[in-house]
Length: 571
Image: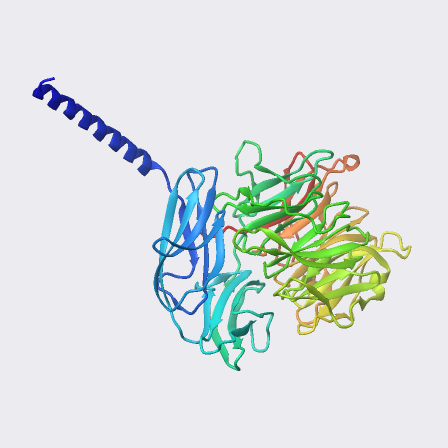
């Protein structure tokens, strides 16, 4: 081959390589890498240690979702890794300036990172990482840490005050990560810490609290003799429910066999479904609401004698899931799981207590758990460190009214607890709603002088409390089935029934939930063939006096066993 020929070949090869390189670059550059959103710490922050990190990732191009996330505190220095699209943890760092990075990998080969530069100080005191915005949505996420390097025995406890002498949450640790249920308003929040050397530190700030609408409704179906699924709905701005897939089939996610209840954590990151096989856990894809199974799901049940799915609920702090086994008036156990705040994975705390409860409810502040006893209410204090329960002094709290009822259901709002149930004294269709005040500091219950409210010719089969302490709702069965709103009198907790009746015939309300904005109630139905009822879900706008108006039914192919709502975190 001549020199000219060799030169020509080389030129052709170089052109081909250039073309291939350009094509490869185009292919790579056209692929949308994941988006990493860091909620805390804020870039440029100056804080003590440990430092709180919360972040999540989404991928618009990868339908397989996010594989993992990681925190780098320096080049090639990995401090924390989690499988999935969310991380929430504290990192211990020595004083200095750090160019940290939060990185995410999707399941399609995409990688993305967000740098966060921060300064870690040695100053003794409290560092508040959340809230870190001008206003916070209810429920409010609070994360803080405390330090004093001069005290070798460290920090003893951190406490939150929402007003003078009002403290809903204390943890024996140098770090605090919790959610608080606060109605809209402006609060003087104080995060205070004590070390083991006699020093006290605090950070005090004013925090406006608002409400935001939820983004998604989840409804678990209960088909006879078949595996179950969780339906996903998009909540429109007017509260109507939409199919995220348009005219195609609803999104469905496998949920084992015989599901019981659904629960969503207060941050809107995780969904749980109880079944006879275990507790199924899912991360919520923040870009579209799809459910992604957690590693380790389904998580083992805590009771080998379970014959029906446990009744589950997440405490207001978002740190523990409680499960009641063998419900529906059958003696069983109440147990608890710790929630991994990054992945959502469940780990049994080892706590168990025998109980006869039919349902349970958490108080508004998140300090206590209550359940129906044979003739009253059991009260328990929740240990925020361990998830264990301790019986309250004076528990069970007696009630002659409850002694005459059966299949009672509890709900709680503000400083009040309400129980609705059927009359068991031979008075036909009569039922009642029993009202209690909750002592904020002790958890002790006192039945209100105006209690019970008798529901003549109606049986309250379900009660639901408004999170803003305005109303409760009762789904009542009698000559016809429907929902009645009760106004809560501020300062006394007394109930005044509305004259308006939201009819649900021929549909049987099996589950319901209020959205976090306090604007809508969503119901799930079991179709009763002999009444021509159809399975499905409904949205009900809440009027100014609590009445539920103009239901919009979205029919489903199977009965609905439970419903839950989740907010969408900002991208």
